[in-house]
Length: 299
Image (cartoon, rainbow, N blue to C red; front, side, top):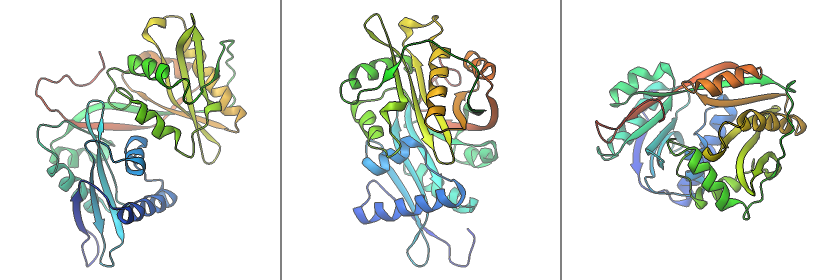
């Protein structure tokens, strides 16, 4: 680690209110400084949890200030881990090594990182798995749609939305297996706006949705989009994407972004057709709980 006094790392299964406050302040400062952040799943578990599988690795400097943080939380297909350690790769390695060492060896682990982290991932016993493309497009887009949408109604739509989401993402590590508690945690986030959470109904039931999210600097995100398997093949994916992009533009976004699995060729092709281009990529590294657990593309 850099500096004359190496940071001290401790791993624990819970945080006191004071510890949580200091960690959140550190993460807020890190995001303002260089954009480093935990993903939404981990951040929500830290803020509103902890839920099952929670472990926190905290690095403190000589003065006791938090200088690095790593966390594990339960996801749909095992544990998800993440780390924020500024520009100190040795500190990040120490945090992740101690965090992974504290996780039982029979638990699967997924770490979303970049290609630059391949060597560390190998040391942690993780191998390359899914790959996400970060795509962006200027707004407004020329495409139009006549699909009928309405805003999501918190409370009234929760159960039906969960059924659609979990059917569409049964294979998905982060988006699948959501519970009412998971959805309600997202609804408590300061960015949540039901006006940008578009629902499409067909045959008197929820058929598809496009959940959008506004970021600073006039950037809007297609946060989650899905079509229930019963309504595949009707062009609803494109229609809801276009509806979401227009909604983001009305909300003040001048650029839209999204993340999509690199091997989802149909979705990647659709987004290219709408004008999206690849901005960057994220690489998942994984440790399986069984040598027979399938990897890579969803079924």
